[in-house]
Image (tube, rainbow, N blue to C red; front, side, top):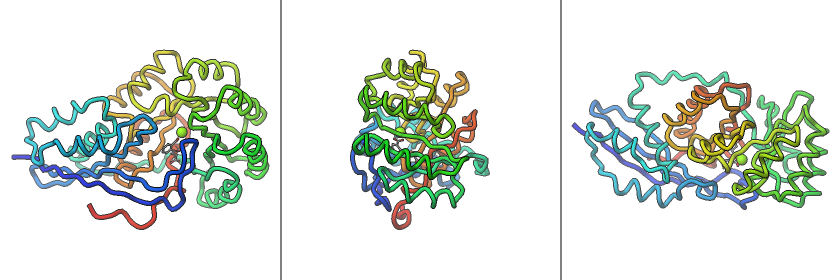
Amino acid sequence: MKYQFSFRNISQKFTRPVITNHGVWEIRESVIIRLIDIKGKISWGEIAPISWFGSETLEEALDFCHQLPREITSEIIFEIILKIPDKLPACQFGFESALENLQENHESLNYHHLNFSGLLPAGKAALNQWQNLWKQGYKTFKWKIGVNDITEELAILNLLIDQLPESAKLRLDANGGLDDNAAKLWLEKCDNFPNKIEFIEQPLPVDKFSEMLELSNYYSTKIALDESVATLQQLENCYQQGWRSIFVIKPGIVGSPSRLRKFCQQHQIDVVFSSVFETAIGRQAALKLAAELSSNHRAVGFGINHYFTGSIPNV
Ligand SMILES: O=C(O)CCC(=O)c1ccccc1C(=O)O
Ligand SMILES: [Mg+2]
């Protein structure tokens, strides 16, 4: 008896383009995979790479899917899936979570205890968007910085801090787009609002690890690594090199879920789980890991402002 494997490339338009330091992102493409086991049980998985973030490209993911047989014997399916190379981390996540879904008897996973962080648009649009999210129950917001001129952004931050309710928390995400001076200006500014700013995410580029370590020791505002820990290998490296502040983990591109579990169980890290703008398929698998492995109070970064237009296409 054999497992059936199929896959499809899908593409969805963001309701509002996502603007980061890397540019404007309008369409999310991913690969939906389907496994059918010997009893006819169907399971889905999603491969949602972000190559500018350090994962494989969509083409590499599709190439990997193309070279797999459409029928896989039960003897070798685990071998294939557990041996996907580390250079294909989004594939590792998609296939391993699809296989896990097949092995589970019921999907009664409860992640309703998680707090969610809402994603604000970059620039001054944030000023008239947070209210919507607040009404929906979000208490933590994330705002992209390093997109416009720093003077302008610092002025918007002042307004945002004035406007936000007392109990609201704000995260700033620079996507590695600051230089040393700008990072210091932002951190100095944030140190004035210790009860408002939860952390600054990835202030400097990935190759500036020791500089970020230094900044995290000097300023009281916390720094969260994101691009620097995009994959498990990078996560393990940064931990070995002494990072003990916050780690952002994006299950969708970090790699093998079982290896991620092992890492999080071995090391008590301060972690924030975050989306890669996946569809409901990848989101469910990622939130399952977040619910299992979040050892702290931090809101998960699965905001809603990136909802896609239309419904998920048939696969
Ligand atoms: O969904 C969310 O709320 C946050 C997700 C997010 O910001 C993100 C999503 C895709 C790629 C990069 C990033 C990022 O954190 O930089
Ligand atoms: Mg980030």
